[in-house]
Length: 202
Image 1 (tube, rainbow, N blue to C red):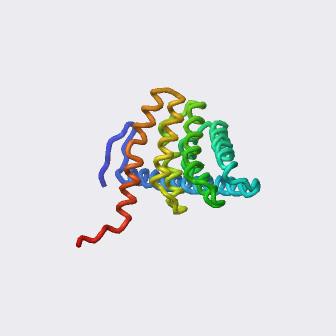
Image 2 (image 1 turned 60 degrees about the vertical axis):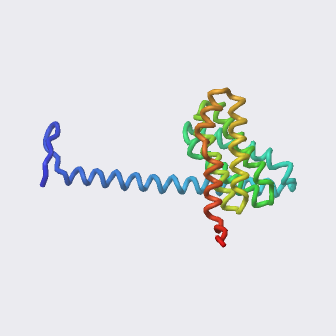
Image 3 (image 1 turned 135 degrees about the vertical axis):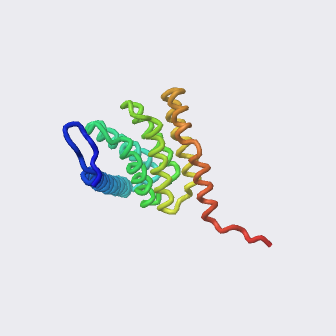
C-alpha cells in the first residue's frame, strides 16, 4: 500500500481514491439534478406559453407580448433566488419557442424577441450579457430543431436580436455578445449541410 505524508499523519492512496469516488458520485448526482430542473423549466414555460396563447386566441398578436412577459418572469425569479439566470435562460428560451410552435405561431419572430428580452433583462440586473445571449440563442435553436423549424433562419434572427439588444446597452456589450456568438450561424449551416444527402457525382 502506498502511503503519502500529510500534516498531522499519513493518508493512504486508497483513502484518496475513496474521496475522489465520493466527489465523482456527488457531481454526477448534481448534474442529473440540473438536467431534471432544466427539463421542468422547459415544460413549465412551454405549457404556460401555449395555454396562454390558446386562451387569448390571437396567436400572432399575443406571442410577442407573452414572450416578453415570460422572459421577465424568469429573470425576476432568478433575481429573487439570487442565482440561476445563465442556467435557466436556455430552458426558458427553448420553452417559449416550443410553446409558440405548439399553437402554430411564428417561431422565427418569437425566437428573436426571446433573445432580445433575455439580453435586456440580463443587463438590467447586471448579469453576464454575453453568456445569457449565448444560452438564449442555444435554447431557441435547439427548440427549433426539435419542432422541425428552420434552424438556420432562427439562428440568424436570434443572433441579430442579441446584437440589437446589446447595442442598446453599449459598445462593450455589443463586442462581448458578438465574440460569444461568432460562428453560431455558420455552425448551424454546417450541421444542416452535413445532414443533407450529398448530390451524386455523375
